[in-house]
Image (tube, rainbow, N blue to C red; front, side, top):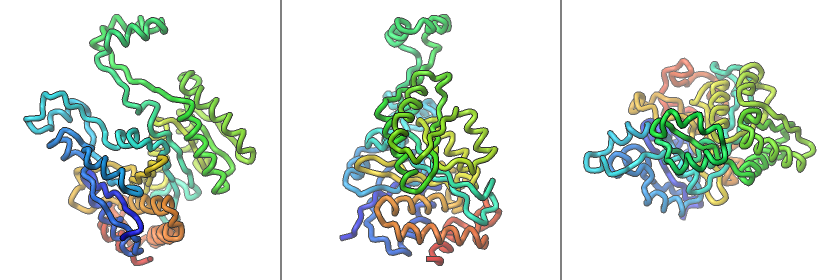
Length: 372
């Protein structure tokens, strides 16, 4: 029997190709695992009206963790048009399977390292080593939205917020409402995880980023909670920034930041910006961590136009596998894998198109395997 059971979720498009590349590297290291395939993605939405079938949910309840490739998502109206004819008009509503997975399994902590590796021609600067902690289940991505705005929802808001009256003239049928719901428990959990990481890896400061001067209640809750948590870590500074200024400062001098913690949407924005500073989404790995399950994924999309070409950079996926190894306690194996990735980048002999080369995804994986 294998030591680990790993959920294997290729998803859509190039997710399949980068997962194939990761498997080459994991097999080279003789990682002792059984890989359990899970159906997820756009094809299952089109044919079943469910991009995250119950059978896959059941499978994830039996594994140690999961690797996930990439997903295709489209707006509600476009998604309905792509359903097979017999499913159209039945009230099926597309919902991102990765967002649903995060909420269903309470994968509350999204961790996204953005590190500049020596020799990468795409590095903005060479001293970048930022880890972003993004709350993963609440905030703007909580999924509680309305369009058109129901009368009872409007009435409830109007009773407590006189500002609602200014919108009524537009007609409730013309109003869309997305909520930003945050709990003190969620804020405390993500900030604590950021500080624990900073403590474990000798980081000097944790930056909490929000917009409390405008989003006074939700942003204020995040900042107040961060200040409370920071009292338990006297050796680590707490820096507070607004999201707009933080984006500017990351471009100006990213080397000033080591650990950043933010609400769901702001964390998403910051992590993509930071990824571009170290070469783009081809280098952007991430982990979705809960109390009982963790799902590891590169942050790029399914890139349908490249599917079948083995063109995209698999390093994000391979570094994602490295994060999985760390989480499983296979730290020596994880360290060897990161070192091999760094050596291939530094040599510059094998590069995908985004780095100015012409090698395939699988050739990059083979080059990294050779270093192992």
